[in-house]
Amino acid sequence: QVQLVESGGGSVQIGGSLRLSCAAIQRTGPPPIMGWFRQAPGKEREFVARIGWSGISTYYSQSVKGRFTISRDNAKNTAYLQMNDLKPDDTAVYYCNANVRETEPGPYWGQGTQVTVSS
Image (cartoon, rainbow, N blue to C red):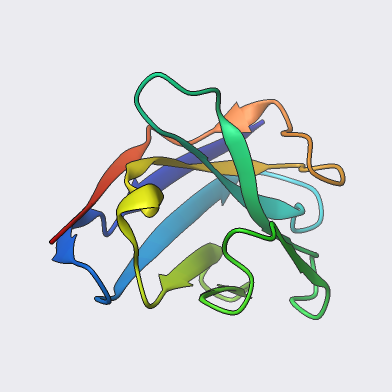
């Protein structure tokens, strides 16, 4: 069982930056593979990025590669998503997820945080 609590969303202008955080509460077991997904209005939820338990292995969707960086601090049980050069198409609710497999979500979700990019 993993509980995820997100923070850090908000509104920014085109080209701006935001950092999302996801604190994981897990009673037992190794650090899970963490990931971020997003859902824009009228669209399906999509994979954004994932990070392996050690923090070394990362993988990004093509739409965010080179602009977003996923990281984690296992001492704090927290994963991060640094988002730079934000675009209007990045506007969505962002969800943290645990036990990600490839680009498919695991069963544990955060509550979601809104990111809005405007001109």
